[in-house]
Image (cartoon, rainbow, N blue to C red; front, side):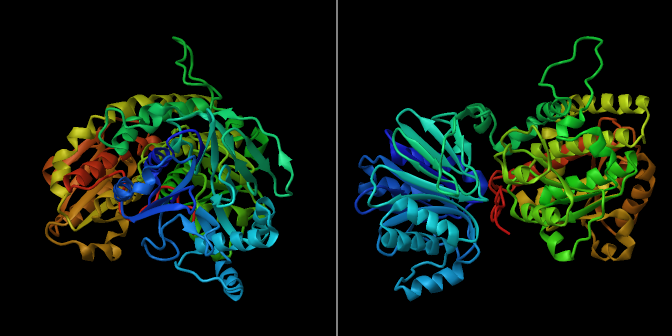
Length: 622
């Protein structure tokens, strides 16, 4: 959600900014803009896709001049509609300061009133314009840039990441952050700034993480870092773990397609990470490595002390939480409650002694999940985060952390990160069962072996890329699609319905098939598409009976099943079968055809599956 880029030094500033913004399109946006340092600043903004901004920049003669510093932004509307006046960068009233901003200024209304009393007027509806004018107000008052920024830092409530230029200083780019991601890259006679390292990875992989409440000044050859007490901090750079190949589509048409095909590798990497090993094949006749408590930053004693588990998450991560619940309660016999992070704080939560709160987030920056996590900590809970980004806000806030090994996920609709979250849930459940003495050594070994077979079976499921096409063609013109399942199948059906609605804009709903007769079946009419998921042998008979109920009322039924679960083919307009695996882990295979279905329907409807409308990859506001 929103993206920041900045550059200072020797280089083609305009092109560097536009390339960086292109790398951040996946975060979701509805307008974009750049500011180049000149006297006065050169600003160009556009509503819509980045191509609109590029056209305006190409047509602007001022933008063709050489510049040594600039900032850029992709905006996802929060305060104020998508328009040029609300697009970033924002310029202060006296044109002394220009900045771009990610996050939300929670006290912007009272600050705006204060500034209006000082004679300031406003052209936009944004909280960001309040921030840039507040910086200018203190700058004019203090006559010192750093002092002004520290004064502003004390006034602002909420979250922010700023990239700032001052008219007075033609050689220095300033930045500050609180609870919104920001990272600096060091190049040759240059520094780069972005909300995501992928924005400048084409130019450098030498990075400086920016810590919470720090203020930085960047010039062509120097970086100065100041902590919240205005003390200068010395910090060494590190090398980013990402490679350029991870942020490019390569041979694939879309990032979503690429990321679906990466799932065998990233699930395997996550399994090996849980054993504190890198991606290396075991020697012949060697047993699979053992999962380690330390991979979760925990000890066996920490696991033994868990009496209950509470999962908080949003979107697909919330669906992964339901799978964790089913597997954990089955293996470890520990009760698990799953809650939407956006509702957690407002439900007057009661956390019991021994309860572990697990937050799941791909980005590790999801605002609702972070806020819920902080609330849980206030209530005295121990916290574990399952995230995909090292050093992210949720990871830093948690007592314990497990890093999924999905690598950068560019497509807005998650695929490989979700699959890694499933794997993390399986491993956690198995370790908890072991620590609690609820599982024998033989069963532990057997289930571990089954988990290490998953990547190969996921590889087999990649053939669904083309096999799903007949079903996709049948469904592309539907107005409503229903997904049915029981137990774990219902948990996976929630993800299937979300994925299809996200990128095809078809209304989809998932239902526990046992609930049909309690109201939902009234929605079924002739031709209603229904997708039944059948991977749980003990529940398959009941689910098939429920499918018969909707079929007898005219529904057009499709089945996605485990290969050893028999169906009457004539009952279905189409069916696909996944390889046999342990029922608890079947979701990792069941989700593959659902991902491909969503992808193919999106293509058939002429949509861009990587950038669904109105959605953002990293939701950093509530």
